[in-house]
Image 1: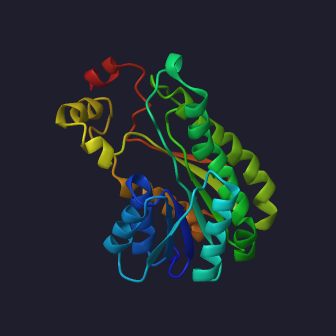
Image 2: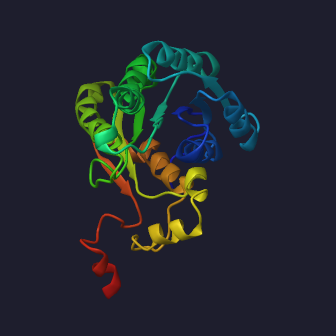
Length: 257
């Protein structure tokens, strides 16, 4: 039985939809006080309304900027009296082939996914250190660190870059009793994927040994584990949550079993 996280202060960036919304739901159900961060107020309000009353609030901020991250840290301190867990989840994934990539598109993806991760951690450092049990949990991806996919060269670079950051940050912050880890989701059923149709979803499932897409709550559960007291000795590590997607060396490997 894990030590309860009741009353812990948690920030989830990119928490208004998709995986971030699932992370917020899991921490909320565990009794944490959750501050979700996003840029769309309508989506933020909808997410807060969908979670148990009084457990979750939102703040609008652009985490690709130092000023936006400072707002997040200050809001968590004001509403929760401190900060125990930062789920650095915000990310964008526009689909553009390498030959067509513009400098602006590269800057936008790296700005939100990589720079935003670094800036959000930096802004939250004083509060995480004061907690005495600070946790940083980065949502990376199998795309970039482990696999590649056409159209996501800039996205893959940003996600691989996050892991370089995690390993060094884990060393620097260890003396302050802050752990830094990453979760690497595979194909997860989110609002965007559901819109692509049943044929597309079935094709994706066929590449996964467990035969199904992941849920946002399953990613949230991995994050929840890394936030527990029982995970206090884990830092600088990655957890792949992908139903075995990266294991087969070819489609034929799945056809044999």
